[in-house]
Image 1 (cartoon, one colour):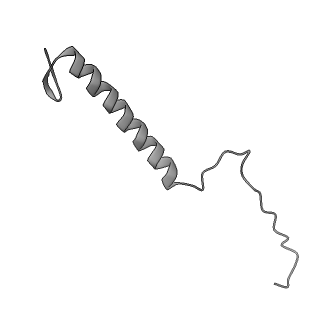
Image 2 (cartoon, rainbow, N blue to C red):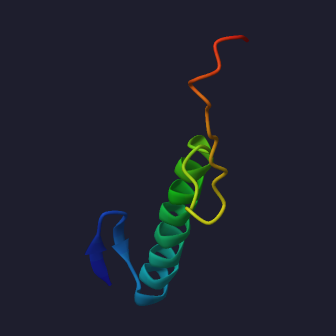
Image 3 (cartoon, rainbow, N blue to C red):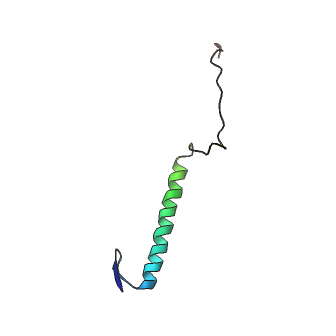
Length: 57
């Protein structure tokens, strides 16, 4: 038995809680990526060229 942030835990419980912590952290990382869909890798970006000389719109 060891004292952890969850209280007194056996080695098996420590292993399970560690796995859960990693899953939760990964989900948070994935969610933050979904909040910012405009950040894309350069390969997937579409560049828009604007012809500034055209006066009519």
